[in-house]
Image (cartoon, rainbow, N blue to C red; front, side, top):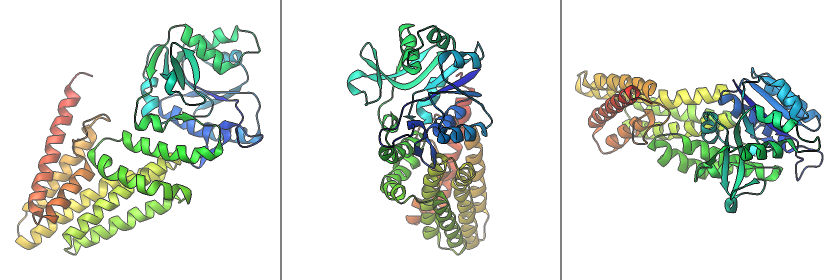
Length: 392
């Protein structure tokens, strides 16, 4: 059984009377964002260590409880240990921690005690030193008996710090925080004014964790340009979703009308906007919109391929284009279901096949584009099936 342990004790640095855990972050509070990460990692119970219960924290805890997990607030390690199953494993998040699924999930899979660390010389403010040249980066996977060990200490201890040092002294495995985008999106925040910058970093890290060269070379550059403007103006996700729908529909209408190059290029742009909107929806906990945008990212390329095949056959009076388009959609759909989360970037996906069609059509070879995209999807499917057969 996996349980989550969150700390909501530290005061915010720039908002008198507020806790760092209740500062606003991406349309929710920091502690609600932490809880959502824990739930996505598989926890079924969350224990929140508090020193006081202001109304903002009570409201956040109540909203977390509506997600289908058991939530308890405690004031000491002894109370926390009493609420947990003796055989449960703990996934611990530091007070005020902001991170991403790509950082948290590997820790959740560890079997023994494990601490996420950074070298002491690279530690941000707020990271606690644990000796051996390392600083704790705010995530730990621990046996619940560590809480019982902390409970046996004098009552004037700090639960988070004591639990950390008990784990370190017990020889917990130390895993280094990855470099690059994951580290940029990871940190401990106690100031409201810096959380907007951190939210931009989290979106960037989320996009970086998504596989595929379409995300790397098209969506991420678009995000770098658009994110600062969107964040500063607090643009609703519904606006991005509406733009995705409008661009996607326009691209399909253009294809139906025989404007093949324009339709495919609009489709590529619409899919990129949809991928960006899906990340914003995920960050803001708008699950319905996130699923809708994920469906659009898959659906627009499929419909575009079918319309392209129809348009080509309308000119030739044959069925070759439609057959190739159907083969592309079928292989792409099967490949999507077979591909694991971790895969090489060059493997195909729906947006990649759409780009293949768009580039070939721009060069005046739309039929060749269908052939290449169908082959690309078939090769990706074959590799995905082979990967599924291989031992994990």
